[in-house]
Image (cartoon, rainbow, N blue to C red; front, top):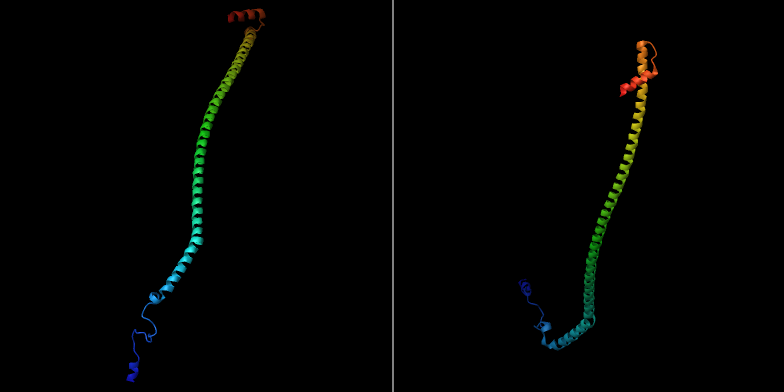
Length: 183
């Protein structure tokens, strides 16, 4: 049994490596010419593929993108100029509107002042006419009242004399007595 343990060995040595070379296959000099040929063919095919198909597409995409960005920037600049011009036009319109509003306000105020003055004068004239009519009516009423006072005074004097004396007095004597008392 001791022999069985001796036949098995443990380690890192690869058994049966007599058919292989000790060189890493890509670095084997016997295969350099074929590897170089395939390298040139592969590189050439890859170069043609990249230069004829992939890079023109990428360049087209980049050119389109640059053109779009430039176009967008140009549009933005133009729109900014339009916005500035629109802002200036708005300011001018607003200033014009304010001027017109002030002029209209002043015109309206002057018109209202003139209308108010006209109405005031008309009211003054109407009130003066009413005052004159009222004064005339007062004078007329006073004159009628004064006319009635003479008659009332005569009647009262006659009634008093009749009451005191018991006789009816002379109307001419009462009228001359009232006239004398009045003056």
